[in-house]
Structure formats: structure tokens, C-alpha cells
Image 1 (tube, rainbow, N blue to C red):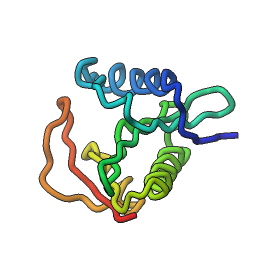
Image 2: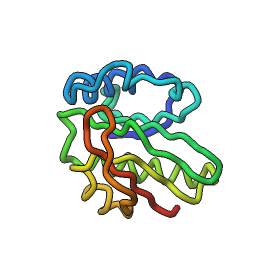
Image 3: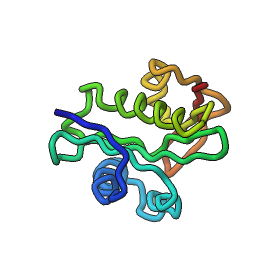
Image 4: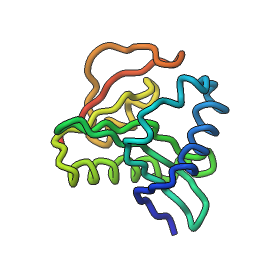
Length: 138
């Protein structure tokens, strides 16, 4: 059974981010690891004890940022990514946020649009990958 919960031990989240962002997508370690993890809420999706997906939430006033969302290759296409985004939005709403935003890799814009996010601004390069900002009222 798959569960999604906020975790204080985010080592499994880091392992997923390493596998997806660093190993699969070729993002450098300095670009992936920053000083924001310690103050963030980390969501972890698991099947039993097996980590399958993660997202990092950062609150700034009434705005919550969903970042570092990734799903293990074996769990892609199962709806887990959408479940993580829905859980992230629910948690941000419970934390008092009225707006969620994220920086989507451009190929993933349709995925986020299906979850109610709207793109804004121009495309930009982040770690060598085209991105675009997206937002959603909570």
C-alpha cells in the first residue's frame, strides 16, 4: 500500500533526488543540493518501506513552493506524481498558504496543467533544462 507523509528523516528523499536528478538527468551535485532542505517540509511516498517519490515544500508567507518533485522510474505512469502534487497542495493549504507555485521542467507543463496549475512568465534555463514557472490558487 502506498503512503505519502511528511518525514523528518529526509535521507530517502535525497536518495530519490540523486537517482532522478543527478544520475538520470545529469544535474550537477552543487545545483541539486542547496541550503533550503533543512527548513523545508519533505514529502515521501512509499510502498511499504520502499521509497518511490518525493517533493519538497517551502513556505514564504501565504505562498508555498513545491520543488524537487520526483518519482522513481519504476513508479512512473502510476499516478504517484499527481498524488504527490495533490498531497503537497493540501499540506500547503493546511499550513495557511493561499497560492502554490513551482518551477516545471517544460516537458512536464501538461502534467501540472491537469492538476490546475497555470504557466506564467517566460521559459528559462535551470541546470541546463528548460523550465517555466506555474501557479495555482489554494
